[in-house]
Image (cartoon, rainbow, N blue to C red):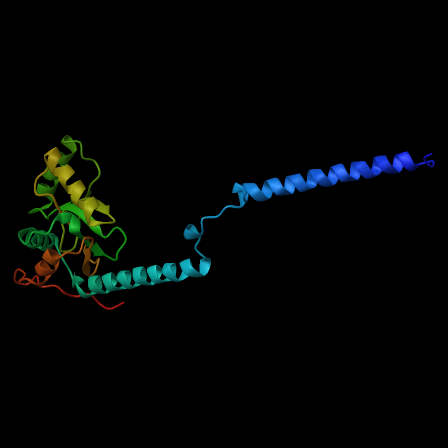
Length: 224
């Protein structure tokens, strides 16, 4: 005859054996199936940070060296004129074009703000200037100022601009309206004019070293 409680103990033992069997079966299944895809790595594609950073540092150093070399070349090829009038600007452009340099490869720069102007050179007398002004108004031009004194007395100012390109375009617009003898140049008193290189090339360097028109030879830019 079983003692009291012996049936409960047998049932508990049986349950423990079943649980142990389930755990063993699960462990065996995982073992034979191999590792889960969640923890699978492609070692060939893994790169440590210490392996990548030196390459990036080398690339940055190469880029900085290239930029420094380019800046040094531009400074070595920089040219300037103590002063340029409208004729001088036209001669610089003509020289560069003859040498095969496109207008877009460089520009002329002055330090003065609004250092470029568009104008009609001095007329014979105030009466002649007035005739030109009346003609300009009849053609729709209202922004103009007569120059009353100095070496440019009786000239007609048609606008001031911060750069050469703005002045050139406005001068062409005035010519398209029918005005005659319209010029553009650095404003009087604007100081030295520097040729700024936008697209360096062997052709441009050759043009800078070639013989310039008499009296138009540039000088090296001042060191900054």
